[in-house]
Each structure stands twice: as structure tokens, then as C-alpha cells.
Length: 316
Image (cartoon, rainbow, N blue to C red; front, side, top):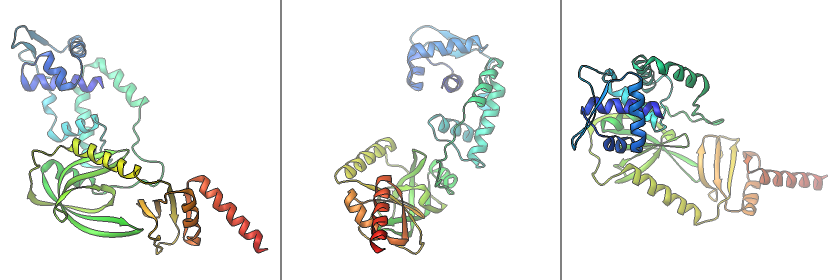
């Protein structure tokens, strides 16, 4: 987004004093041509940017000028960055308040020439991160975010799911980072009880307490590399066996699915299980009787309905 780049250029020039086009291009991950166009646009908006030639030359803000972007506090800058990479704060949280404060400050600092564009964006674009149904409230997200930024250990109450059964476990975790994938939040950290780096689904964390103990992330660890490797391992695991996902609504809260149901996702009364094939799924789900109803797939639902109708006809 161009507005983010323009703000970033001003911040870089204010913090470094002098920065050349190559350094700006690397920092912003754009071409030198884009940097030159952005600098030209800032100058046209009235920002007094000067340049110097030579090996140590570059762009800098003229003496006596400040964009006042330094009035943004650390939390506001961090929240703006997270929004820039697609991690949006939840409403009515400290992060959400930081975002609103940062946007208000930026709006006051920007040239009036941007006011129309900002108004158009507000009126014509809306980001809605919530899913249509079964939205999962990650109640501990703000606490987890703080612990990640402060490098403080977390005491978690975490729900594990296996063979249709949910168990609540206590974990002490060194939170290395947060990942958002398709509106789902994941915490990556070193689990002391498992003595290894693990991934935790944040909607399964029922409580989180920040501990006074701090930790250091190993130099060899890269959140990006870890996540990409985890994704590839998951894809390999899934592709190594037949997959036929079936989503069920459990009608009886005391009912436990049989062991042949490989749970893929469990969100309370809705469960998705891998039943490997259409034939196996038809036989397995038929045995559930009054304890569950099929949500997806539609063809399996239609098939079992026809079986039930035929069964009733034979009983007459």
C-alpha cells in the first residue's frame, strides 16, 4: 500500500538522517524506480526532502523539519506494522485502541491532499476477518501477543483433541511467535513439558497467564522457516493416506465418536473427521444413529437419506 510506504520512508529518514535509494528499496522490498516516484510524490506534497551525491549521499529531511511521526508510541507503530502484513487487532482491545490512536495521529500529520483518498478508502473498503459460521473467539489473544513481544513465558490451559475426546492440559511455553492462517491464530513456542517446539491453535487456549520469567529465542530459529516446514510436513502427512472429510454436528453432548473417526477439527458441537473413503464414511456414519447429523459432504448426506427412506419402506 502506497500510504504505508510513504510513512515508512519518512520514518527511515527521520531515524537514520541520510539514506540512499538502494537502502530504501531493500527496506521496503520495492524497486529503486518506485522509491524515486515515492520521494517525488512526498516532495510534491510539501515535504522538504533534499538529496546529496557521492558514495555516502542519499535522501534526507532538511534541517528543522520533522514529520512528527515520532509522536507515535511503540505499541502504535507495532500495530500499524501488523496491520500492514494482514494481522488485524480484535475490537475493543489494547491493540485495537492503539490502531485507532495511530490512525488519528497519522491523519493529522498527513498533507490535506491525502484527505480525499483516506475518506474514499474508509467509505469503500471494509475488512471483515470473521467467518460466516462457528466463529471462534480467541479470548486470550491480547495476553499471548503481549508475551510474544515481551519475551515472557506463558502458562497455558490448552485443550487437546484425540479420537473424539477433549482433554485440558497445563503447559509452560516460551512463545516464539504468532501466525495467522486463513483467520486462524497459531502460537509457535517451546513447550517445556514436551521439551520441543510446538504449534498451538489459539482458539484451544482457554486461559493464558504471563509469567515473570523471560526467555531468549535460539539464534538458529526462524519463525518463517519453521512455519513453512510445518506446512509441508502437514501436506505430506495428509497426502500419504486417503482423505474423505466428513463434518458432523454432535446432537448429544455426552456422545463420544468411535475410535475409527480420525478427528481433523473439533469446535465444540461441530466435528470434522477423515473417514478415508465414501464407502467407509457411509458405514461409519450410519452407525451414529441419533447422536449426530451430517453437515458435509452433500453427496454422503443424500445417500444416507435415501438409505433411511428405503429402510422405512421395507418396514411397512
